[in-house]
Image (cartoon, rainbow, N blue to C red; front, side, top):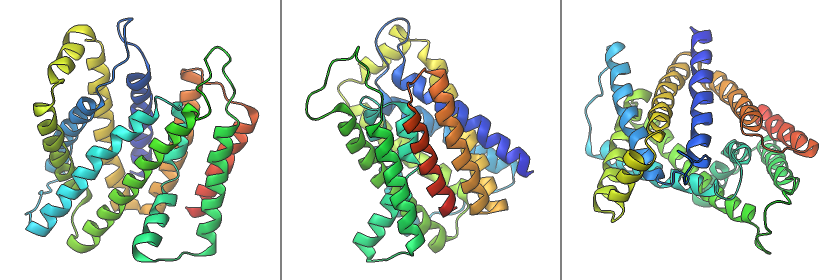
Length: 303
């Protein structure tokens, strides 16, 4: 059972990562890049609701009743989820995908920062060492990025700095979302897949409502259906892989615990970086390889 969960997480999220990079960076039908990421997230949320509901039915689980306090927490969770992702996609305009994945491995930093600023919590020396290692590793990875002489200089404020700023906002929102999820689990004792379904319902409603009033919605339909129909396959694969992967994540968490899940997800991110580098031909220096090692050594200490 554990082997099946590990294989499911690897297959789903490695596929999800490759598809995410292709959708966000590649050109379709020899034309412009796909830029309508709210629509992409809308499709992902819809697929996640359907897959999550089917998974719960297969296991004989019920969504459970919604109280007003629980609903308000789900609305908050869906709102944070809806606004966090666009910052990650915006960051990809300025940094490459391996840097994004490496940065997304640093969720401990915003979680600790938010706990310190909001709740005044302090942490053990080990956690500060872990944060230091991760910060040093990510910073070194950015500074040691090989210079592409074929691309023009972007001036004193580098494009990568803008990318890191956008990624930092994404991480802070992710940290807030994780804190909200922890609060829901501890206070309401809900099942993980139930949270998955309700959160994506809210996200779908919020993003769908936004697109209904957005002046460029017709442009999105024209882009997807008429100009770049080949992107539809990637959008469906992206949403399906992410949704099924989440089911494997919650099943692993419920049956084998957080330590096993963290170990699996950390190693999965390592493979995501490797696949991205070799599939999309990213230039990586020897120093950057060492930086990746420092980051994952720090994460391993935390695990």
